[in-house]
Length: 261
Image (cartoon, rainbow, N blue to C red):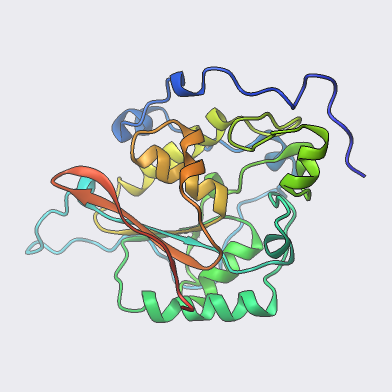
């Protein structure tokens, strides 16, 4: 069902990962950022922009008495979607638009208790159903669709587990190997850099509903690390993580917190 990669196409280790020159300055990204969507994802998207019914999450107007919220000090809340059949079994899931399982629905609802007292200037979601449904059940039906939060495109490895891939390519890892027909780590980094730039364009904290690998790369880029260092940040379904600051330096303040624990 899944074509085998051509010889040498996918089993090699990506060279020079630590030397990737990807800017992590949000201002620089904002000057050049466009909607960087994987070609295969763009081809699948129907005409028109997907929308979510509900009130807009456009940032509120700032009152004259309210002090300026420095965007470089805002927090980013990363919320991974609830369980799906493929996330439960460890199958790489990018463009396959799976619904949440019964457990995933309960997980998403539990997120609302942890987020209901938070005030966000902007709430963004991946265009995929599992992320949008998680946002809705968590109390953010008005979340705006951000195409750059789409999960990493796995190409020919869509729907396969790491163990299955390693039987063909011993030692293969998403973080260091190649994805025939999919995205490179640098391409994913370009997308999350654009998301970070958008988040920093508003006054206040921002919530992002998305997927495991894209959010792990986003955390790495927030810290100024190459995208493949996202391998260091394990992230479970229906969890909340927070990227913030300490003495003006970007840090991770919370990570992989389960809403149902």
